[in-house]
Image (tube, rainbow, N blue to C red; front, side, top):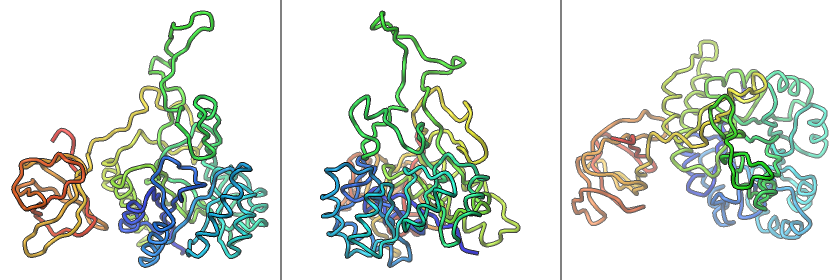
Length: 409
């Protein structure tokens, strides 16, 4: 049985490395141009080289997004850019524009092509067309049910793979084909600049009464009329595998390193548990509880089981739930002194109770009993961003372990 690939977002080089360390089989990232996440950190050519080498050394793959819908002025810069990265052994390019596909084939003839969800792939005839164009993996539209996915799988070449989003933000428009941001503030979603106006709060104005605002409400619950809940399929991985999906994709190139580590860890554990004994697999609630410690909205299963209803929208708020703060990342650890060098990310103080977790292991709790600054001088609090600290650890840790603190503690 070929194991379901866990595919994680890498908004920058640090997140790429964390995703791999915490269990991703593959990562996807954008370069500084031609990716649909202009707000993410993205990777320079030098960082792409370093990231690909890092991932490959640990057995992980790297997929690069080149999924803009190109305009005429993009063509020559794209050709120039591809020539500069042609030497890097990128495992696949995620594309949506036929012109971009043609250019990649011209400049990197042996490139592996994956079709972006932006291309709205929803039926097996279209899948066959893309196969003829050289595409070997389809990132399915989020609007497909499991039944539709099974039918596509049964009617396409065996070597063509299916990838699907399993976790993260849902788009109010069909697979991201949205003009709302472009229309309202001249930021083109299909060129990586979406301002997410679907998350904004709206009121109604009558044409002849400017300045008089009326709330837009459904059942008195609020005014976020286009605000979808986030997708979460952590509890339903066997159904995805049964439908023929080969790669489970987590959305979130603009999310934090803490988010990536937390969500990837949860899905890694669930996938590994399933394949260790598929016949007796049982979902463990602690994986879900761990995942909730990253920022999140309310969850939905999207279109997988049926068309979404008003229960899949949140009309009250577009805010995230953030019960935990990311307080630090371990840089190094001394087994003899039990002291960890930590890069601070949010304020922590002597006496705080923190949780510490790392790749492939459960978290542990401890109080901050020894807190030193970079010069090993005792301090009461660490309020400065990315301050270097020395912290006494009650259990052994390692590089890239993460410290978090429950808000209110």
